[in-house]
Every structure is written in C-alpha cells, then in structure tokens.
Length: 477
Ligand code: ADP
Image 1 (tube, rainbow, N blue to C red):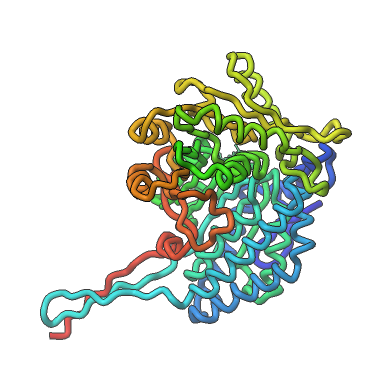
Image 2: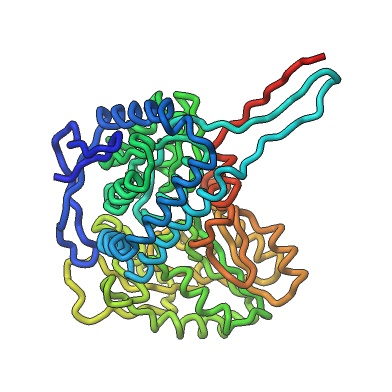
C-alpha cells in the first residue's frame, strides 16, 4: 500500500485504507495511494510546525535558497523518471510531461535564486524614529493541488512558500499525485530538512477538507474548481486564514482583421488542445472580427482537423482526459452542444486502435456560438473551442470581459496602438499580444479576478503573496 510522506518518513494512512490509481491511457488500475484523513493531516501540520522551529527556521535566506536550487538540480537529474511517472499518471503526452518536469525544476531554481533577494523597506517617519518593514514567513502553508499539471503546480506553490521560510503540507489531487511523492523523497535527499515538506494523499472531501479547516495552517493555496475554492475559502475564513485561489477561466483569444494568421493559427489551436484542454488558462474562446470570420475559421479549422488524439507515448497532439468522471463530463458537454444545434466547425482525429477503456475524446470546434450559450460562458476543461464573431474594438472588449471569469486573454493584431488600448481594457491577470500562454513562464505573475480567483503566483510577486510584513518602529530620540 502506498504511503504518506510526513516528517521526512513514509507513513501508512491512519485509515489503513488506500485509493486505486487508474492510467487514463488504458483505464486500468496500476497503483494505489494512501487514503489520508484528518488524523494524518494533523500529524503533517505538527511535523511542519516542528520543522519551522527547527533547523529550517534558523537557516539564512541564502542557505534556504541553496537547498531549493539543489532540489531543482535533483529533479533535472531524474527528469526521465519523473516525466514517465507524470505521463502515466495524467495521460498527458510524454513530451508535455517532460516540459512540466522542466518547469518544476525551474520553479525551484528561480525561487532558490530569489530567496535572498527579498528586501524589506526603511520608511520615513517622525523625527527621532526609525521604521523598517520586514518580511517574515506565514508559518505552515497548506497547498491543495489539482490534477491537470500536478508537477508544475507543486513547483509553483512550493517554490515561493519555501523560499520565504514557510513549511508545507501538500494535499495533491487524488487523481494524480505520484510525482509529488517522488519529489518529496528527492527533496529530502537534496538536503531539505525533515518536516519542511509533507505530502498527505487522499480524497478532497476528507484530507483536503481537513487541511482547509485545520487551525494550525497559516496560509492556504488552492488551484482547482470555483466550487471547491469557495468551500476552502469558507473553511479557512473560520480560522481567519488567507487563501490564494486560482480557479480556472474561459479565456478569450481576440483576433482582429489585421492579425498575422500564419503566426496566430498554430498558437490558437495549441492553446485549446494542450493537455487535452485541461488547462486553467486554456484559450477556450476564439473571438474573431466579423469581416474575417470565415477566413479565420477556415484556417483554424484546417489545422484543428489535423490534431491527433493518442496514447501518451505515441507523440500525440492530445492525450486522454484524466479520469473517467471528467471524461463523462466533457462528453456530456459536447453532447449538449451538439443537441443544442451548435454548428461543428472542426473535429480532431482519434488514433485507430486506442485502448477502448482509455478516456479519449475528440477535440471539437463549435461556432458561431450564441453569446448566451453555455459554451460561450462555462469552462469545459476539455478540448472544446467556442468560436464567436465580434464587430469592433468595443464589442471585442465587451465580449472578452463578458464572462464570470478573468484569468488571461490574448490579442492578435498588428496595430500597435490597439495592442496598447486592449491590453489595458481586457480584464484578468495576464494579457498576451501576438502570443499565448505562460505555462513555463515561471517569472511571470499569474492569477485571476472574479471567479478565476485572487492572489498572484509565479515571479517575484509570489514571494510577497507567501510572506507577511512586520513594521518595526523604534524611538531613539
Ligand atoms: P476537479 O473538480 O476538477 O477534480 P477540484 O477542484 O475538485 O477539481 O480538485 C482540486 C483539488 O481540490 C484536489 O486536490 C481535490 O482533492 C481537492 N478538493 C476537492 N474537494 C475538496 C474539499 N471539499 N476541500 C478541500 N479540498 C478539496
């Protein structure tokens, strides 16, 4: 039976129970993970608290940074092994899994280097006073991680937390957590003191909920669905604990008549196909200026039809969906779109002879989608592209900003003044001009507004998000 990683050691879950792990590529069970519950979370929080008071709490920022850098190197030394684990666990193409592991390493390298570059401030105040603003760790951070980019998310959230001197309890997604368990082991080998990083696998409603409501947690980070984000924030509020939430999106790609289509088309298709559309920042709405609607649709559809769905080790454009449940949800959404009469503009290709129990779906491109249709507003979290026309700049902005979400947006235009205007008017945490996506953009602050969540991760801003300020006022006359 698989175990939990607490205090630098492997523990059998207190429930003595386990959860089966299925390979999305074949639908077959190939492993189990421990079914951690409240008692295990409590043990992990205590281990993390003890680690704060131990060697870790006494390390200089430089030493903390060096430790993170060593973890990054260790991850790169094991890149083939880790990419293999990640691809099998999530079903994503091996090449993408490898990129994800590179990004994971990069988070440790970036935040390893950043750990001793965070400065406080000296403030002007009344005569006879000196005032400094210092940065301190929150304490124990609870990380609740989703299944779509498990390795990247682990690095994204652990990097800044550890760089700022916090300790961590991670609850990875029950559907994809094997990489995180191996990384925890490698981190200790790289010199991370025991108890700084604890991993409790288990169901969201058990281990996840126990972590969110644990009074010993000082900060929570969560990436996942808005519903679960709300539940976590509600639980955390009872303990007056801050949450950093990233909850997905319905991100627009806005294509104007003067766009460079040779450049735009492959990127537009990639932004919805990548990771089988299971990406918070997927470019799931393609908004096209009406006068070039047919031309752009034809170009995008031509490429879309070439997208190949296959097993992770067959170098496909698109792998299977992560779980049977999610597979069912995507298929239901697609059936609803067909039943409601949405025109199909393009479909991807399923490889012949795919394992019949694997969770493969055919990428779909629908349009023109009415603005009030569910596909124009709701996140599918699958390879389904909604195409909508717009008239002019004002209409494009209204349409792009017109969902409950606000995570990222892209503008495709050669007009420099329009690029600047739109980058100011489009709402969300990132705007891309003639490019898309920041999967590997460890340096680039990322996060949403409204239903996409709040707080900023990545880049130096995450270091602020994962630390507290203390203002020290000294009167010396
Ligand atoms: P999805 O619905 O796409 O599977 P979720 O938002 O449910 O994504 O899951 C993301 C993470 O949140 C996973 O680690 C999951 O176990 C966890 N989770 C799910 N439900 C809860 C909950 N009620 N409290 C805390 N964590 C949860």
